Image 1 (tube, rainbow, N blue to C red):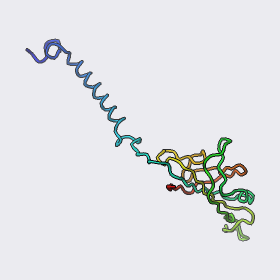
Image 2 (cartoon, helix red, strand yellow; image 1 turned 90 degrees about the vertical axis):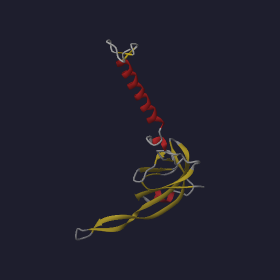
Image 3 (spheres, helix red, strand yellow; image 1 turned 60 degrees about the vertical axis):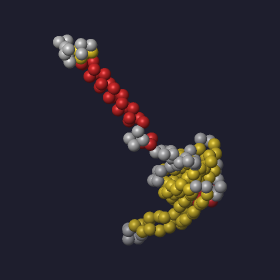
Image 4 (cartoon, helix red, strand yellow; image 1 turned 135 degrees about the vertical axis):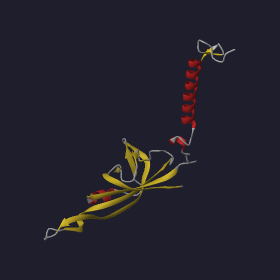
Length: 168
């Protein structure tokens, strides 16, 4: 008995081309299965935290009128989508606004603006730190990202300067 006969069939029963096609399909299915189930090859392999933690976002808003700084209060909740969120203001720091002016010689000089304020606000909310996108107060939070500090009575554009996670 021949291994491959005149018609190209293996042991006279199965076509060799059919076997090659079946092997290729099986290899593709195996590769896809390994790709989707392997933690090492998958970004989803990140192990989630066992519980939510407090996320503290430090937002810096420069050159604000004094009324913005005066209207912000520790304990105010951040508003998003016309509703209060669980995010609340836990710290506020107000300083005279850093200002670059021009002196009589035409040179730029650093000074403090006589009216405007720089406001730094720390906002906290309990979230899942394993999420790829961090959302605090209904907004994405990343260092350097724009953030709107919005309460019932205040709305100010800010930049995020820091993000920190702490257990309760």
